Image 1 (spheres, chains in turn purple, yellow):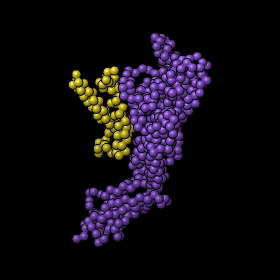
Image 2 (tube, chains in turn green, brown):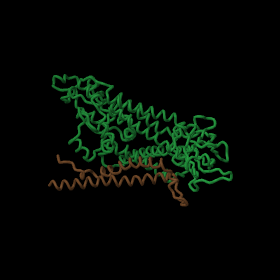
Image 3 (cartoon, one colour):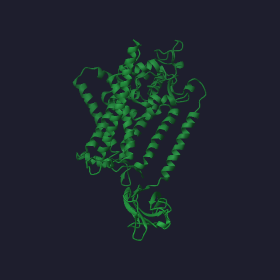
Image 4 (tube, one colour):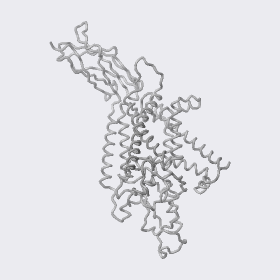
Length: 463
Length: 91
């Protein structure tokens, strides 16, 4: 059972496209799939409605350059966390692929989720597989055009809702809805709503399995994560072959037949239009529709279920199976270690930053009292979700004096405060022309909110 | 079965193979670029153009997409033309 590639695969890859009409299917895996699809759609459409502390719970506020994730506020400086999150997502994909095969493709990929939603609409309006095929073959008539217009209208409305929801992750939902109803949507917001809607409409309505076959990078490299213990959807040729039609209740073994009645239902239900009986193919998204379809036929024939089933290469060949194997352990270990690092960093993250810029116009000046003075511009970033009062001090030179026009510094939640400070030192205490100094910034009521920023103090130097 | 050569790839798939990878690259590049630079700081001093942040991010994205698109198209173009050249040599 190897992935079929080479000649047959290539010629198919470049063949002109034939529309696939997946037949409706029911069964235990289909129920699981519908559950997964509905939950994911629910998460997508309802998340922007969630509120947290007076604002949208999850919001990429682009104009303010902040990313709100429930209680957490991430700044552009924290981009590393998002990058780490993406790496974690990639690694989990590796881990789950090694263990469960293409479970992502069949149950969770947005392409699958929206394709199923669009197919469901198509079925509700155009009818079952045979009715849909008949409708497409029929010459244009008023009834056909009416049905098609209805389907596309519902698809477009659903797409627009999807596009609107997408943009509401970047512009608060309330604001966006208000702008929509007063017809005052900004040009770029309108553009992105339409762009995302068009992408949804095209991908879920028309491209469908072609996205998996021609555009998806994961479909091409997922076999690299596979081994003989990976869960796959497979047909059992030893039991099924030779396939052939027979009368119900007849002794097929006596007729020299296998359990497969060659009804082709497994091919008809396949959303990518393949025949699972040809073996594992890269087009197979492991959606398990053929399992449910075949089980139903087996029940009707009073044969045991499982002619097509979830299995592993080792199980199918009667070899011992291993869930824990080096590949799985390695992926799991890397995943856990990275998760640990990310969580530790997030917990220890200090939502405070101090930038120090030394005045570049003058190296130093001498005060009336004969002290050497340097001027600095300080930028305080309070990245916390609460306002804070901070105290500032400077160290590094004996008798170093910090001159500011305020004692405690008040910075609003999520804002930047800029101030100019002066440092004064006795020339006698300056060992070199340039001495390192450090600014210590600490929140008055929260000791852990402390940052230290290094700077240079420039003087005339020892003569 | 005749050998499949890149010039036989349908137009639509050629278009996808250029548009799609460059789109992904543009998304990543836009994310990286704008996490490092605030569009407000990129406008030179005393030069006031009234452009919203969303417009700036969108334009940035399209600039990245065009750059990546040119590269992707180059790859496709050279693949196809080299293939044509090689198949001519074979004859």
